[in-house]
Length: 151
Image (cartoon, rainbow, N blue to C red; front, side):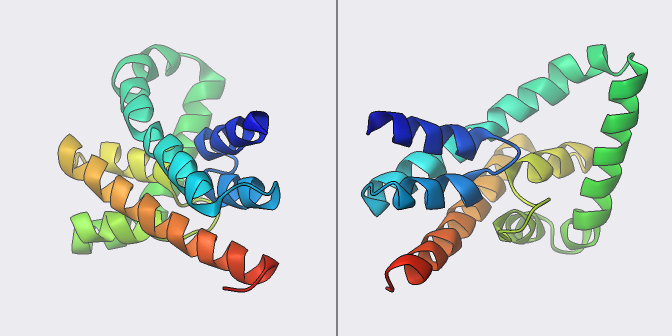
């Protein structure tokens, strides 16, 4: 039982799913939807400080490796082109909207990279990511509930 909640949280921290996968997983395992939502949301929000630490301190060491540099440039270009117009035009709200779309390639990982690339103030970037994750998680929760039992 507790293992399923831990797995849901791990999915929420994972760049391969985030809360978009963690919430449906936890609910489909039969856990309380509010508990699953809260745990997956918090786990997904915790990605932002981890990403900022990585980008600030570890990125410069890894960039020396050719494979990492090519991958980092590819991800940075995707984050910038996928979010660039929205963030440049709408700023804080653009970052919120970009993160809240529950599709692959959007979310806290891409939002953190975009905030780093566009040099958005950390506190504003954190709150934009947190608000975006909250709404994204709500959308996923409602879709999951509607598709499994109806609202």
